[in-house]
Length: 259
Image (cartoon, rainbow, N blue to C red; front, side, top):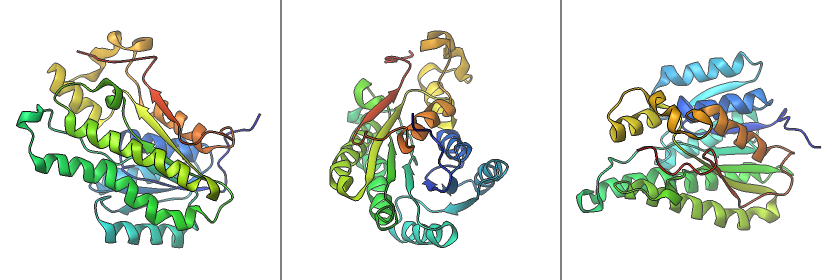
């Protein structure tokens, strides 16, 4: 059986300074990849992710760029190639939460902001990275989505809409890039222990500690970033020889709500 050794591969992970992004970056490094750590804010947190990766014996460097900024993203992609060589893994993870309001109370500006990060952002980064990705016999793009796209909870339309658009982009790109050896897949976490997960839990339940939900969750615990990272590593490794244009829900067998 093919293994999940990523030695010799270069990955760019967006939104990797904390939470799920950090977990993915470290998981890729544990499997042997060198990792470019993207962040928008939180230079110190990004440096902590870099330190965790270098402690594993892998190469890592932090790059500040918003996925909504064309010039900044182009400069980052060029810098990654100059520092590491051509990337063969791109993980589109950067994300923001919506305000949790009903459609009737949601501003057009909020909708535009969520689409800019979750849909246009992966489109932009993937487009800019494709010249590097295509230089390899095998490359991978991962779009981090959410179970929100099948739960469709009330008061979350901008987030759900934007994530669904990101998934549509990924599924389209998978067909376009198949001939170039670029696999494109989607990983969709449920509520996960992270800054965003804790904010969501607090907003819905009114309690600060996300772990109070453990008893209601599948397997008696809240998902952690390592659960998501394991799926990403499998998708981009030789253990996945034939899957592209697929979506994997990391939801403990059907988590639909935690109210």
